[in-house]
Length: 168
Picture 1 (cartoon, rainbow, N blue to C red):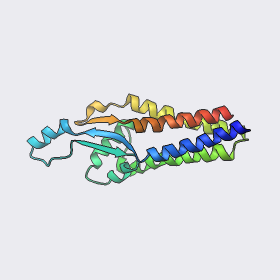
Picture 2: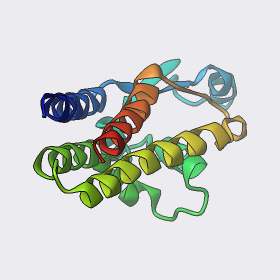
Picture 3: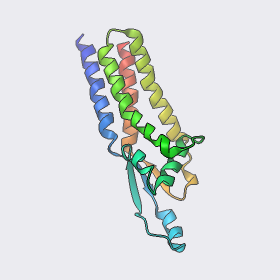
């Protein structure tokens, strides 16, 4: 019983970590390769390095940098249309972590619910991991780097899923 409570508490803690990491920089964009072309064409000078957190992605998707966000989103979902409108789906990241933690705490004795929650957490990890590893960042005039905060967020879902599967 103590082990179950400790593991459920760990899931709540990890969900809190996911929520915190949502506000940390997830993507770092280096504009230096495109900066030279932009200056040659007489355009305005942009900052050389820009970072985006999960929180900022939907907000920025409706600004002048929307094309960049749309391009980054299309790397992960190539067939997505209206990427600026769908950028708000990023908010599902912390929400899903909280939902998984609540399910773990409330359904600690319901094995099949824990199995579903564990598989869902692992599925989030696998899908995000594969999308990032298979994303083609070389098609842009900018250099896109995935930061450790996004990787830690993704691996947190794996840990939540594994804890739920262990509780099963």
